[in-house]
Length: 132
Image (cartoon, rainbow, N blue to C red; front, side):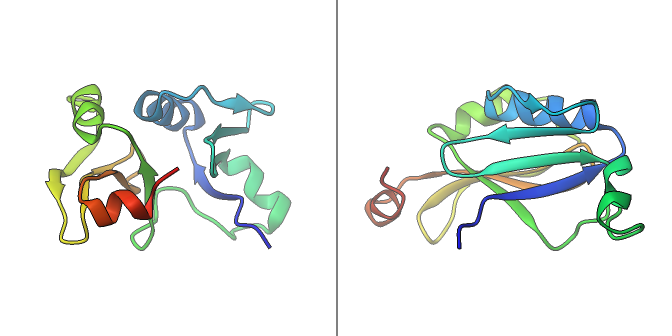
């Protein structure tokens, strides 16, 4: 089994896709007007409009209701991501901070309120853990 993607449901697809394109520097691949994917080398962030929910099960997902999942991106320069997103994030939760486990992390909320962690390993152990 392979973990392939996480899907976020939104009421404003263009806005959310635009945020993730700016934050990651990756252009979304669109499959019609209700679905887009941000594909990285290791995983995909799928973003679907609320119109896609009934295809699975009516009422199975609601936009902007997540308070238990953190979407995480390994980046080369977390401080650069912070500068790039300055003034454009809905909420800056925590400025870049070196965490006890060796990653320098930036926590923001995307336009739908989902928590997003951009991180760069900075200690030898963390760097080794995420070596590509």
